[in-house]
Image 1: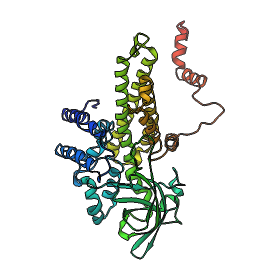
Image 2: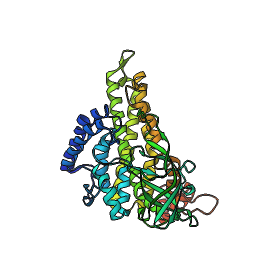
Image 3: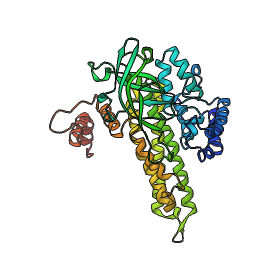
Image 4: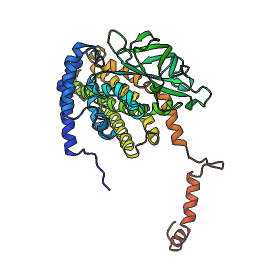
Length: 435
């Protein structure tokens, strides 16, 4: 049996290059690009596209996808080590071609798209020429998609979509949307929906309003509240079979959740590094902050939580690679998703405290990261739902005990042990020793 926590030399060297590239090339771009997802911004294109070419030359582009799709086919464990480096930046995932929601949408198209859909949408998406939107959540649906009301009805050789979708991610920039709608209203809830590719310029799509997120300073919200009114798309734009919408969604949501966690490790690491630097640089009452016990406790607690979370993420990534089936790792992914918001909120909050008024100002990113922790608690399913799912998975198969007291109370176990070793105890007593 072999076990270790070290990367192969070539992987370690590659990660060192990525870390330097992120620090020296991508982080400066973050400070001048308004939104890395916007391919219509000439400043963004002038700065980000040359970096993307460097990444492609290093064969680090779209590493979550297989070689047949233009990626490098990294397993999730190796991808986790890469995403840790990218997660501390705004532009990093875009520069490396693995940004949400496009990464998950690409996986859906790769698994379920027709040849036409792959040629028309998947190829330019993977190339980084366009971006996409995931249009699933509804205003009244929340974390329960079984309550969705948007419908798609087959009319000849076209699907007709009607309904409303809230918070369609990056719809402001998208060339196409992946939409979930009810197609089998009489089926049981998890077999009632299907997914579709909808071109963003299709007649009948009404942009009710753009939605901004606290902590993000772009002048126009990039997520949109959309209304679909008799939106007609070709019948072949369905992804998978009728009623397979939930199964199709899991193709992206399982990976999306763990990828969010990988990147969050990077954010927490960045906060931790700044905490340490401030602690050894700043004095109060004649002593460095690093010498104050409460500050030392913050540093220690943050490192413990970060290390625990990182190991949970890496273990989950390893399990995904081993089983090649997200269904077998659902409990692990739920645990990662549930742990993520608190780890980020705690680290960012402590970083604010150690930096004082500077920490709460917009001259440092900690306030944004606190708000981001709440975003992480809602994206791809609310934390509470994941805790419920995790608990149910952990309890499944556990048999209840009969009797008034549980069989593992110490008096019962002690009696069982004395009975098991009765001869030894009797012999010891005959020898004059106290059993």
